[in-house]
Image 1 (spheres, one colour):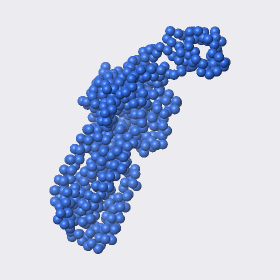
Image 2 (cartoon, chains in turn brown, orange):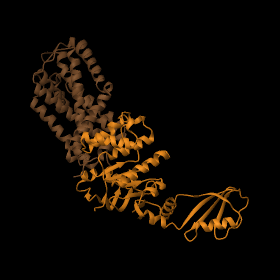
Image 3 (tube, chains in turn yellow, purple):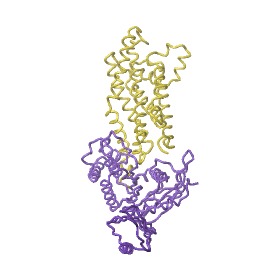
Image 4 (cartoon, rainbow over the protein chains, first blue to last red):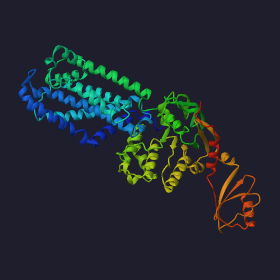
Length: 261
Length: 310
């Protein structure tokens, strides 16, 4: 066997990529970890404290406490997506993705390595925002297992989506279009700040077509024990989304889309 | 012994219809120092791109040390080290991070990677800069960094795509010595370069590619021996007003201090100097007008019809 054969140390390549991704966003922590804390802190101050005090309760919870899981989930979604799309696109743009492509690393390992980076940043930002939330309200975790499952699966799903975005992106504008015009509206309309039960029947039914709705509600179920949708349904939707997006990533990598001529 | 590289009928047609390679048959023996030359856009980088998986071939076959890339590309890639033409590392990472990460991508354990990194960074005079970010390095250092990075997994075949482009002569010569030593120790080397002196000095075998086809494949010695005539530049010791007749040689006056003469294979420099002496012309120095390989290269490429392969 060739000394450089990765089969000798199958996890070294994966570990190397994960560590590289981790150090990348930690190195620029002022750009990656601090802004979500400030933005989400403002949400808590404005929507939770100033406006929320006039709203009263939502589904039996103080408004501040009700929106906290949604705001945490919003930060996990946007940051896991942003991490992968910006990291892979930068590597593509500056061509150092070739370091990985010329190596014997299998495509699946490349995908999972980048996704692991996105999940780590999503979880880290989620933890920071949770700490910020605790400055404003009490948070009890009704079901730690469900909470952990939902946050992990959601971060994975949006990391995969970010990966696909980066593959197709040709310029920096292309990596901001999806977050601005798709991700943000879906998140705001996914029940972060309200219960969909308050909506007219048509809009309530339409909300069920929004994947973020399932994530926010499953996470809220995990933390508050209250949801607009059954957690089993929500988990199935998220897991289904992961299977579809992961398959798409594998097919695109096999075709060389965006990375190979 | 298996060939280090064997391509048969290698073709590449891009999506927009441009044919970059029109059927490349190429064999490089294990242990060779091989030059792959050609003008810009001839197809050299496309061949390298296919070997490294950055470009997907349209047809044909590629074997690296007997391993078919269609059957086990990961294994074939593990034999290869690549030094690309353009800088392709993160400018924000340190020298150490870049080489250690690259070793990791090839599955090299951290301990082994660290010892090899020390060895190659020292040999390439980068050890003192190992904690510096890549963006702070000079152009020559960046080139050496890419060579060190390509060697961390101990490749059996090293491919260098213009490794000395834009570096000063001192760095270039030290790079030549380093590569020659590497080849003596058993690494097969394929080199593309526009410095034909570099190819002539280092390589034993050569292929010239133009318009996506191999137009010449020979040993370096054999190719140079086929050069029928060489043009020399003569610097004169005493300025010359008018060129006196010099029998047997076609001399051309460039200016008062310089002459050019073309000497064919049947003639000798001794004869030339005898005739010059008889004509009262005193020469202070002599040099080739162009590199010998360059002369051949230009002749071969100019003979090719324009246009891409069908």
